[in-house]
Amino acid sequence: MATVGEQLLKALEDLDSKKLQKFKWFLKNNGSVSTSDLEKADTATDTVDVMVERFEPDGAVKITLDILRKMNENYLAKQLENWTATTEKN
Image 1 (cartoon, rainbow, N blue to C red):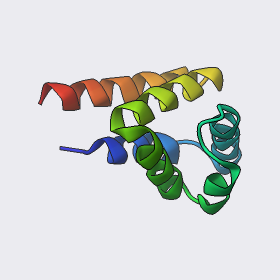
Image 2: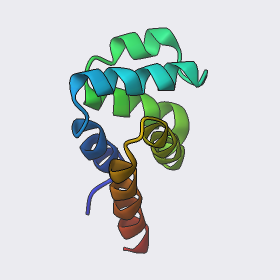
Image 3: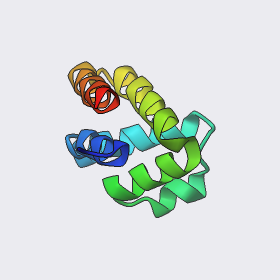
């Protein structure tokens, strides 16, 4: 069974580098993650680590879903919802 971090990573790895940068921009401008923390997050794995540390797993999923929807990555958001719903049921 995949952890929340693995599910978040799977979602972010589906973004190309420009879209990952845009995701990080939304995350920074949300005001919840410092610029210095995001500057250290060069990869999707680093970004997931920052989010899970800052928001706890459930909060990281919520903010990821919100940002993906703002980016019109609705299919990816739906996939993440399905993955997390499956994990919660098990």
